[in-house]
Structures are given as C-alpha cells and as structure tokens.
Length: 67
Image 1 (spheres, rainbow, N blue to C red):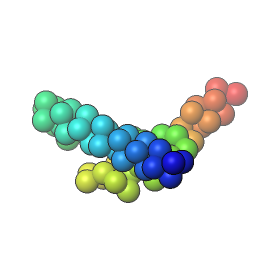
Image 2: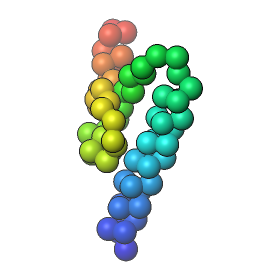
Image 3: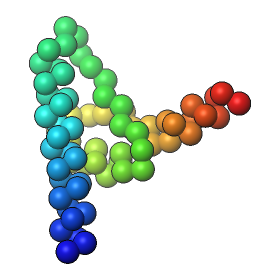
C-alpha cells in the first residue's frame, strides 16, 4: 500500500543514515557535525538518535549565493 511504502522509505532511510553516522563517528578523531538537507530532512531527523544540523534548503541557498 502507499502508506507501507512511505513508512518503509522513511524508516529505511533513517536507519541507513543512522548506521552511516555511527560508523563515521567511530572512526573520526573528533566530533562530527552531520548536516541534513532536502525536503524530508526534518522528518528523517526525528528518527535519528543523534543531533544534526538541519539545512533543508541548502542547495537553493548555494544557488542564491552564486547569483
């Protein structure tokens, strides 16, 4: 169903990102800052167990800075 697909996308993306952040943090010599961008950044961040910096419009900010 569409709801099941949306749930799978959300939880799958969040868990994949969580695993990536854990591996990066384990191998980093100092604390890392994760930055989430894009339209679903805020939603996905709610499922992570670490704090992240949210910049949902980072690409648009970059384009604006070039003009």
